[in-house]
Length: 565
Image (tube, rainbow, N blue to C red):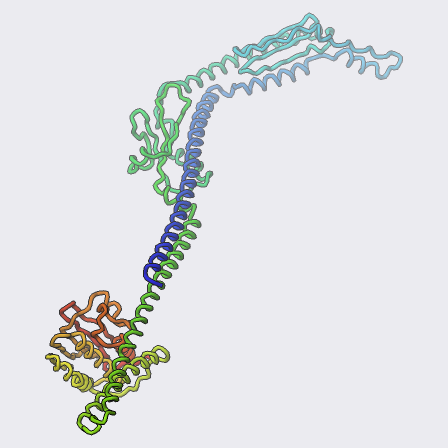
């Protein structure tokens, strides 16, 4: 897969991820708006209920005070008087003719009882009184048949006492008695109704009076209690601050939090207090919720957490997929480079051996021992070169499969460094360069695998020579740091960029030099060296590298390492 296709796939995956996340965020915002609207509706309903309760409470206080001054002479006392009047009426009424006959003739069958006088026909009764609800009055009507009716009008209620169904004879007998009783009760009830009218007038005056002192009408503690009750009843349990706002002057008359005056004035949660006042200036109850945003979010925490988890999972999955795709592309490029390098590295010695073998087999060369020896030496060197390449590949494969099998022994690291330096001294000097050793470590005896450490140090010196095209100047120095020994290998070569430094220790990685193949190798040397140093519980890193100036590599090895398996 080429790079362009990978880029297109990456863009499509990123676009799909962004689209899904955008839709999820849109749904979250939509749900938040719904929750916020519900919160606003419940909060406003609670404030309206608070206003209604305050107004009812004030009306109750006014009525209670008026009734106390009235000494309980209310409309309910009128009802009690009516009941007493009915009772007294029945007690003072003499026996009717039917009752008399029933009583006196039950024991005398010879004298049959006189049948009761039939009731007055309805058409003979007086017409019903049309109630007049515009005034309070007591009216008593006596019909021509002796029936009597008392009608009491008060506050759109009618109380009626009617004995028109009694016989005319009984009515005549009891007329004088009842007239006196009714006259007495009528005077008493009329006096109470007059007092009641005064009470009603006082209450009406209290309701329509001009602007009252708000502090006398509202108790902040009671107001806070009512607000909290209404909010809790609607499921709103979040901190709040309230204030009573004068609309005309736009200031707060009373509040529970003076430090939040500006927020209370700017709050969206307001309602009219005492909206039925006729003359008083309008005031508002304003409530400020400092944590309303957090409260609304807390009501949708399940959606937020689940959405966040899924978005994070998708983000990690998408990012990791893109990373793997690019990494595989990179590994594919590295593998291709490795195959090309390996082909080149093996092709050159094979071709050289083939030419040297053909030359050594010719009769002219066979008769010249010196020439024959030179060609045989070339064949041997190229064979060793091929053998070293094969060993490098096999060692790396063995390292991946089973790890390193270290042959531990004590040895002097300075002797090992000098041996490696002497091996490369001739190639370096042939280019007009030099190798300088500054072995200043007081303790240079360590425990480790001598052959593997030699390969690691030799590889670093070899790289310093290969990447220093003009008169290499290679310096190797040692010093002790705590219980370790530090090895610095520096050169004046081409240096490395930041990108190269990040990948220099990866297998098969080689710095790109275009189509030129002027530096031999498979990209395994530094990767193998790092594995060996880490197996000895040591560290290797690029201490400094500047392009066209040079590179300094650092190796730190413990004097008595704890070997990693």
